[in-house]
Length: 255
Image 1: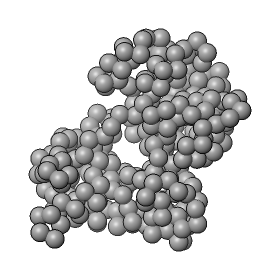
Image 2: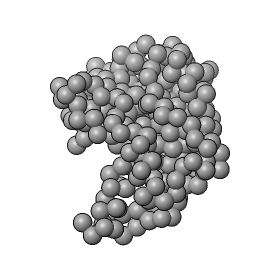
Image 3: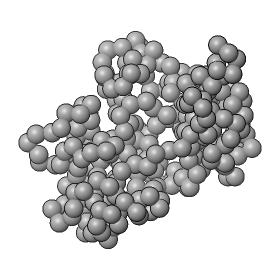
């Protein structure tokens, strides 16, 4: 870990933004234009509303915990960045990892959503008692060759979709090996079963996820955030937030 640039590591392991399934239009409402069209089977998973985090693990047992934008803690640090309680929540997971990123400076990156507690305005939908949970939603490997590049080169590589994410099968295997729960899997659908209209997608969301599946206690509000739709090889991925469809339909109805 000492032989690589932490700036390059941070850039290479940042999680890319996921586009909305429908394009955004005026006033933030959605249009009927589908941004990410599916031609293969589509896996629907629950989109958990919390703080995006990552664990970057190396073959020698070193690891770094980061938020979406920043690296917060490295194994052995005396002081951890307290942002959103991410390090406190994920350090036991990182300490127990036995799957490694491979030889040399290759890194295994686990992407997790930490939620509940006081994380975000929707924390109360997951807990009424201040509990904190986490779920893994993606994983990738980053080679030592990439980490040896300059910061500008790494940024270009990432923007050109150079990150090698796990397929659904690989992600399931990793979660099983490490004993880490994934975001809930809500079924696989044929591409033709995924609705392309605003009203139809709203109905799809309310029927497939009427309440969150990751509530941490009985006092949780349980309102869901939405779905992430992806092919099993992850080449096509999009998100559909319930609130976006509700607000769009309210604007259309004049309410």
